[in-house]
Image 1 (cartoon, rainbow, N blue to C red):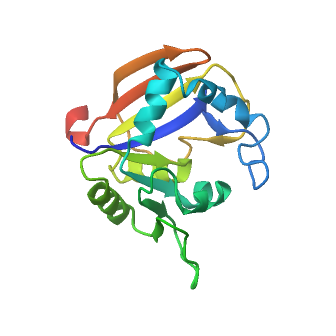
Image 2 (image 1 turned 45 degrees about the vertical axis):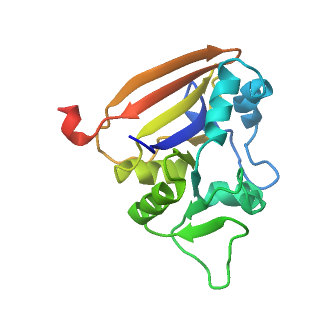
Length: 194
């Protein structure tokens, strides 16, 4: 696959991607910053540096609306001026996202636009809502889960609203680093799961 749609997400062992009460001014929730300690090694030559560089080599971003807003809309530039496709249920009249961002209300159209914009590079996915919508629509090809050795005990879960569909995964890479295990999974298509 020349340009997979790949979810990148830090997650606690109990499945949380943010602590309780995530909101503006406390974007990662209470104690949620703990999930991103591995980024202290993002400039290293080790596994965390490798994964970080791969994320920044993507050619487009798909973000959920909530993530986009909590991130201050990234001031219109997530990284290197790549297009940002914000998956949302509704767009208010006059709400024009900044810079390289645009709103998209249809999941499959969002995936199609992001793949086309990314060229031969992967598409990075941010946000639980976007990830769940893309997974339900069969549009996620890979998941890079940065599994952190902590139990947050509450907050926002990554896989809460997937519906009743069974999704099979193949572990294709495992990288251990200080305070994190980077796990890359390939999402099997329904015809492969049998």
